[in-house]
Length: 235
Image 1: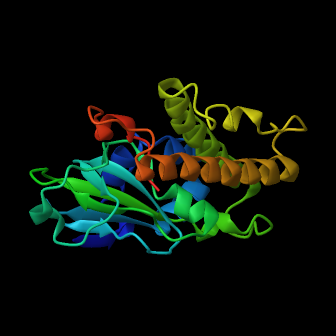
Image 2: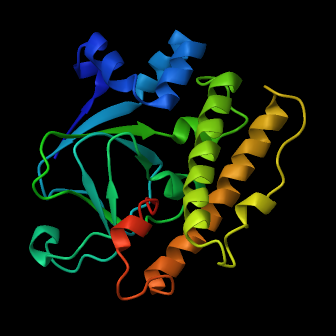
C-alpha cells in the first residue's frame, strides 16, 4: 500500500480526479481557498489486489472515497483475506464514501476493507476529518465549508437508509430515519450546522443498527445474495 499527500501530484491532475466527488466539487465552487485547505489534509492511497486498507477495531477520523478499482467489505478476517475465499459482505465501487460512521460516532470500525482480488489500479482518497469535528472552530474551515460537509454526510446516510427501507419496508427500523426531526430554522448559520451534525450522528446510529441485523443474519435467508443487500454497510 502506498499513501502520499496530494501535494506530491500535479495540481491539474488532482483537480480532475476530485471533480467526481460531490464534497470536493461543492467546496471548490464555494471557495478555492477552502478547497486548498482540504487538499492539504488529504492523501491518495494506492493498493494492490488483496491488500488491506482498514481493519475492524481501528479508531481514527479519516473518511474515504473510492476513486478507482473495487474494494471488499469483510466483517471478520481470521486469516489472510485473499486466501480465506469468503464472499465479501459488500462491494465498494468508485464514487462511494466509506468510513463515515466511525468518524461521526468516534467508534471503532466494524469492518475490514481490502482491495478486491483481481482488481487493478485501485486508488482511494483519504480525508482527515478532524478539521470538521469541532463545530465551534472556524479558524481553518469556515462555516459555509462545514455546512457543505455535513449536508453531504446527511444526504449520503439518508440515501443508504432509504436503500434498506426499500428492501425491507416491514422491518422495525424501516421508518426510523424518517422520524428524525428536520431542521426548519434559518439557513447558512451556526444553528443549521449544529442540527446537521446531530442529524448525521443520529442517522449513523440507525445505520449501525441495520448493519447489526445483517451481521446477525436476521435479515438474510439461505438464498439471499449478501453482497446485493449489504452495498451500504461501509462503516
